[in-house]
Image (cartoon, rainbow, N blue to C red; front, side, top):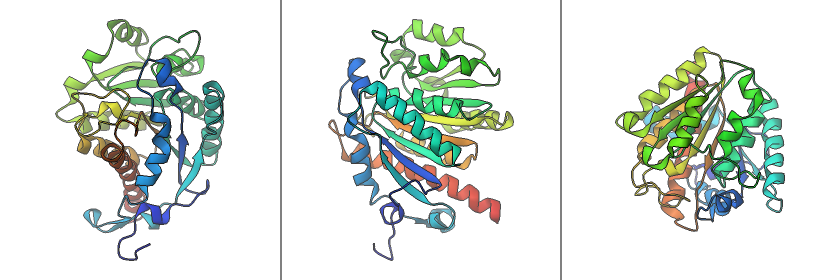
Length: 311
């Protein structure tokens, strides 16, 4: 540790003791089942290597905001990598539920986007009302394949889950969806689940996505709903984020992604966040630095809210 330049790697401890707990989901079998480019199973460990020098912990841009004064960050390790995908999903759901019950904020790094259903399911088990926000170029409501889940199916599973329909204030939001990437059959499936669902198309939000994202968060806060932000990084333009399973020629900018993560962190009703589809076998450094910066901005946003509540 350099005392004049402290980074996240200097303050993260390896256990579940943090207010925010990092969990890795090292699986891309769901991507393979969905005919995507495999390699995201290496995402969590590549993320950790780059996270060591991410920071700084004291950010002068936010009036010398010192993360250490308001938050403890820990690394709870990976889900066991030797399981079947179905077993891994079950272990992930149990792990996330345990953390939520302890009042922790799980931040899950994948791995394929199939992780998002077990994450959402864990929150459903512990919340009266939830908002699930899928930041993604794709809708991810494809049918199962041979009765098996995959990286394109997590939110169909959510929308077919009877628990989700038990509270009329529950919401599922598709954010930054790209019409060129979304089958009309899947769009109509989302529409058929209205009013529980809503699509914010990329073309409609691209000039100022943060304003639209804030409006969703505000609505959830007014409903007193717990929020799960699921961030598939293939929603980010591939010139900034090339190392993903399905890169986007157009999409959110790196700055917009960080702004969204910062604002998500600011809301105390955001109880869970995940990042999916970082694929270091395709491109490790540039994408990995951005993904760690998204995590950093989430932490920074939460620390700012806690500081502002005190002062």
